[in-house]
Image (cartoon, rainbow, N blue to C red):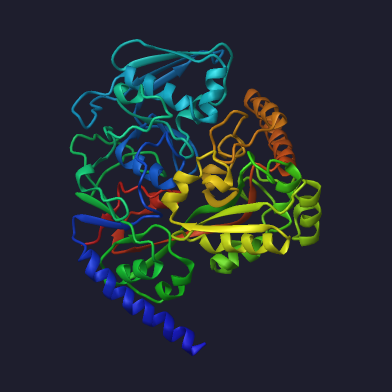
Length: 526
């Protein structure tokens, strides 16, 4: 034990030397953050990767946003109204909204952004299915008409994650969502310094001098986005040891997701503050295009290879941050949380997994498991690989960084030709607290989500969920959706826990508790 501790602190000391050589010293007007991953994709409509979403919150603004209670508040919108039958809506923008290229934000920009978003997002698609059509009334006002009432209009416009609705200039928003935009022109609180962007190392943002924040205090993702530093640097440090050393040295001000191995070190440091954000769920995504997971029985087998506590322990999540067992595909404790359909899959059972794989027609083909080495959940991937082997599966673990995984997971190639069979990820509270927010649970047939789940009954249940305004009926339908999802398995939930972020010398970082690393209102202590 003493030898292990000596080795740990020796590595930490080495990390402190390395970090000092890489980063220099943080200044009073520059906030340095170690982000959750490497920024490689800039277009928020091209991927659901959290690093790209967080980048988008820096550069772009949203029409509406959720506060810390989940209530929907206006952000770019000044006023809005709807008709008594819910089929006609009117929205008017705030004054003085300007894109970073100097052009004013107009109703036409909003309409083009909504229409591009609606081609990717499940709520947006449902809105269009309800007959949504848009018309600019003048430069600041646009109207939406529907063929039938759609009870999730504002929920869609305020959706915080997955595919959030970010407003961009029409000339960019007119780009097909299958083609990533590369020009970062937004009206958000920061400007992206593309000339200083070094993929694999650094992303830089500076304060947008033309941004006019709302007057209300910041609350969650809503309210006044007041920028209190001149510059924000994301310093990508994939090694938790070096990242921890950089924070202890005062070379960075924040680590977005602390590697659990280093929590005991930071807990004893009086200069460091540890805070928890909203809960996260671990998701295991099988590729349904290829054997064996094109068969639902093989996907069900994955549940019998999961003991949630084992996975969370492997990741190193301390017990005080874990949910020992969460049966719900919606965050435990959230309004739609339920144990419906979970009981048969509660306990790990290797023999049952073998039996289901056999029934699915598995014949020993290679199963490619993507292993992201630079994320806090990396050890969980090795656990499923080990358990698959116990069940007789021919496992091929392929290691890579998260950015590479994000690019590879969208490929539909066969696993032995550059594709994949399984990858693990995680989703914050906002992405798994209801049937429409969860990307994999909400993915209708024909979706573009990695894994490409398709289940007609789930599609029907979601449609019913969207069409009812009765709270009790919605809750019952959410339970029905979960029952069906446990049978058809768009993904497997492998554990729920609290993420921990670390700060040094910062004030007013409450918005971080949303689980999204937004940098407005954060201030460095004098």
